[in-house]
Image (cartoon, rainbow, N blue to C red; front, side, top):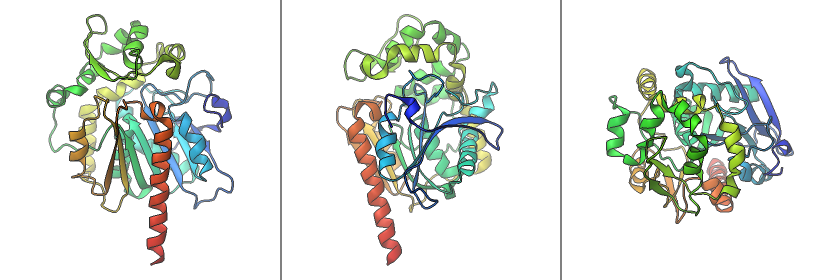
Length: 337
């Protein structure tokens, strides 16, 4: 499994019972059986897992091999709207509840009862909600950058939300119907702004030319992200990724209808990892999330930005793997008592 060679991973494309076709990596370790722990790795926005384009890099590319060599099954899907997975036009398909339904169907299709779900960015938001929508399908949860936020009791507009959390102000622009074409027409500028600041620094940058919004600069060197490949991958294909930002009202309605609990079970092991230089991962939000995730362990990486599994690949790989093994060992020991 070569992190720079997507063809070295085992790719599958399957139609699920939800009607959506998903492309995903399904890496089985030697001696796999139904008792083997399975890790479900989630990430959307700026991470592709396409087998059709060997130049596009994996967001989890550094973790798949090491974690599979620990003896775990690794499933990494292109979420809806990305890569080789379907890109429906209807907005309702991109709600987190709908995507969680797809993921539950993916687990059914792959014969997996319960997973250790690990998510970053929107993938973290989906991972937290998978624990609420399908609690019996998740044995552990680890999230990077985005902490747990409980279902809202009343609807709050995106504009009102960002007044309290201005670090998410860019989402107002992404949710605007005009944003897709404007970003696509300024894609080089936009990707430079998001992915590259010339140094390993994360900061806010005012924008005075199109697209007209403030955006967090995540600050990773071009050579890490292979900028030109991302430029090619996202050209005229941002409608799906940006659809997630347009579903706030739909997400509120579906969570209210589902009567989701506000907290995760105290028995569910949970880990949250954040970087001190990530403007979208404020410590105050992480601390508040402990009120709703009783078992939560918070780990802060000093000097790290948003793209943790790439910027701090070795540290993140070992940190999460050790946490999983310790948790599994503790569970086995308790079962023997």
